[in-house]
Image (cartoon, rainbow, N blue to C red; front, side, top):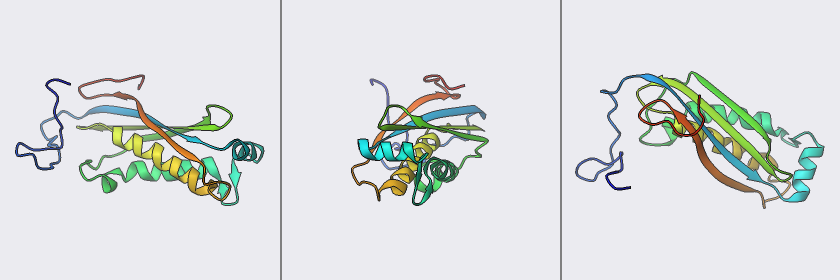
Length: 161
């Protein structure tokens, strides 16, 4: 961590948006995931019902909510730049008998990355799953949420691309 500093703080220690005007616009992609852990009985019920709840198709609704969140991340997080989202995809599936894995990938061509958009999409999709299933149990656990990969900009992390 030596030599690293927070990027959203100016010289006087005040919050500040990063100035990206001098950066080159490049293709960028980020992939994030969030997991949702269900009690055993709830997971069995969801699997048997084809991932439908009384509120409708759980995974499909989560994908729609996550996509909306990706496009509006800059409205939720004060220092995120508004980005033209060129691609957004979700992969929702069971990681185990009781854990649902939600992966979100976001793409743009811009001067800054889409990590926060991918993380926001994955977590809002997970929150939507919780909302749609909470009538079955309030013991549903969301998380962890994490960045899996990013490509473009200064650093490549993981397997994006």
